[in-house]
Each structure stands twice: as structure tokens, then as C-alpha cells.
Image (cartoon, rainbow, N blue to C red; front, side, top):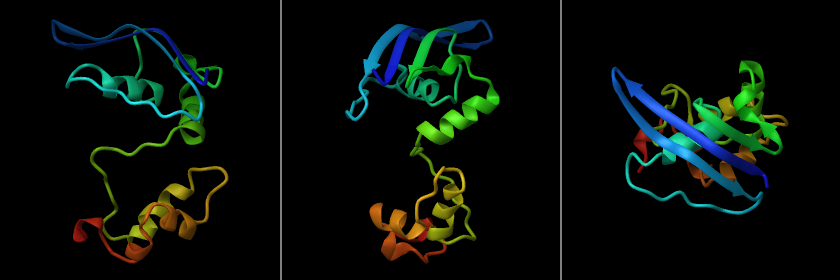
Length: 140
């Protein structure tokens, strides 16, 4: 198993109100397969992905990715884990408005190891024809 989650728990608290979003969740995911998370709003889909991605902490359980227990990683090790293992496409993107599309993509290239050729990345994701636009907000 590439990702192995056992008895994962997550509770959000606001004042006296406690909302249990993940309750002893266990699952295993194989490397190279595609999985789908499906459920109603508030069922814990984003929370689970944020925990696997090292963006949120859990109240209990274990999350192992490639044999590493990511819930026990310190800040530096967690940043390295996110750099080496995680890729995000956020629901709402934040671009640097005064940069071109290519320059916005290129900002991320400094985080990876080894970096990919920026022109190859642009072509692979279908942005080659938009490479010199100043803002993604201008194209439909």
C-alpha cells in the first residue's frame, strides 16, 4: 500500500460545538491507481485530503505515505514531504497578476527536485498557446 490510513479522527471545534468529521477512518490506496472521493458537503472529503497533504492535523490515527508516518513529521520534514509527494489543484487559484501565465507556472518550478522544463510543463497541461498572457482572468 502506498497510502495506509488507520483509525483516523478529525474534530473541528468552535466554542462549545464539536463536529466530528472523520471517525476512525481506515483505508489503503495503491500507487498508480486513480481513486474518487464522493460524498455530500461536510462529509470530510477535503479534510481527508488536507490531512494526507500535510495541511491539517488529525486528532488520532495514523497516515502512512510510502511508509512514512506523516502525522509525526516536524515542520521541516512536512514541507519536504509536500514538496516531494504532493501536488495540489486548489478550488480557487491565486495568481500573481503582474506575471504571465508562464511566469506563474515557473514560480512553482523552484519547489520541485528536479525541476521540469517550463516549456514542457506548459505544453503538457495545455497552456502553450496562453504562455504570454498577463493574467488567467482574461481568458475563457
